[in-house]
Amino acid sequence: MRELLDEVNPASIKGAFKEVFSKAQRGKVLERFVYMDKYYLLSIDGTGYFSSHEVHCDSCCKKEHKDGSVTYYHQMLSAVIVHPDEKVVIPLAPEAIIKSDGDKKNDCERNAAKRLIPDIRKDHPQMKFLVIEDGLASNGPHIDLLKKHHFSFILGAKPGDHEWLFDWVKHSDKVETVTYREGKKTITLRYLNGVPLNDSRGDLLVNFLECVEVLDNGKKTTFSWVTDLEITDKNVKQIMKGARARWKIENETFNTLKTQGYHFDHNFGHGNKYLSTVLAHLMMLAFL
Image (cartoon, rainbow, N blue to C red; front, side, top):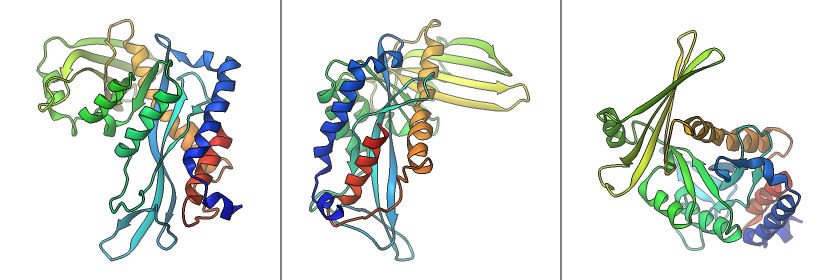
């Protein structure tokens, strides 16, 4: 089986994901995943599934350490449909993060996204997707890619990575605030529409949202995002909850695959060509 699968290009498995997804769609499974203005929340993130100091193949990415040792590894960029009130997630076909033939540089999440985003739009041309990602995604080229393929987005934004953005918000007198109680905490949502993402892309305007949670014991947690959705007092809670559903790709997807019986990061056989990547795709398909 390993010898046979080693020759199978992972791209040929993607049709199976679309077929299962179509059956779920026809069975009206997707209806309970609709969020806000008929959007589907699409959480995108990368994860590793193989790492070794010895076993490797031509498509392994490689990290060289100061002590002279080398770590070979495989990763994939995954996209799953999530909903804040649903424990179930629906994965789409992932994109392998691997070295291409003859390529000396490692592949990365950003390059994989350039393949994944157009593929998703090609497979699902009519679906309204609202992409939710971490702070690595809140940059001009990636936002341009999402807009080009008609995806809306809510992307993490951290002060250390976006000093210009946070400084702009700090000195604006147009910031709106919504405060409310939820259980044993006070939540304050601050937002500002039409903010330049950074000083080099003054043409790229985003809408800024910050969530500050203060527990009754004084513990404070802050989250912040940028989005293309216009934020209002009416939808600000929904946008915040949608943004925080991003964690479902970590908890309900990757954690489940690695700790709940799928043995996602176990080396069932690495092969010389595609085996490791094919096995990871098949596990994600079994999960779907």
